[in-house]
Picture 1 (cartoon, rainbow, N blue to C red):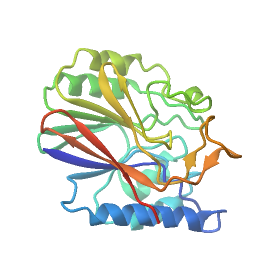
Picture 2: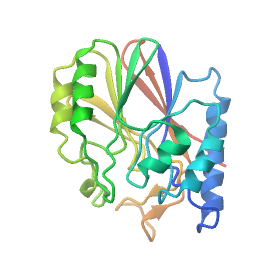
Picture 3: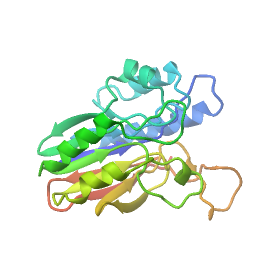
Length: 242
């Protein structure tokens, strides 16, 4: 059995950025809760948008916050790939094997754009990992399907056909996980479960949620605990109120 805790969308910024104290407090609360999990997860996964504008100081803060967790990262559309790599280590397309589970980390960042794309290299790694019968967790920032939000559906993963084709014939346990949406949500892609993690930063306001503005600060920071390799894959949403 392999356990993976997923966090996403911290949106950390410079020390003097507006609202930074509140954002850092939410991130501190989430990471402290991950550190307190007993038993500890086998892996900690962060699916993008650690920084709000790619500033190196945000990644320096994230590196201090996550120190000792050996977290695995994929970049989001708000991230800067070079600054993120310098502070946190590799963030490009790659494979990790933990216990009997394959973790496939896909970099969907398109510099200067909000939507995501898979590279040819990512598609090749995906095809190889999908052919392996080991339990598979595929992690990326941008969801490969529409989620029903007018803004987010315009900036999701472009051309998800290669991901769908690689996974469609797969019968072994498979889980696809994303960030980007700032909202806990479950659906499917190519017949497999797709889990979108709640954000550490404030949630996005959905069209049916009363209020003004695009942000909804009501929900507490959250994450997901994924379990693979022990029967069907399972995901449990976690929330950490103040």
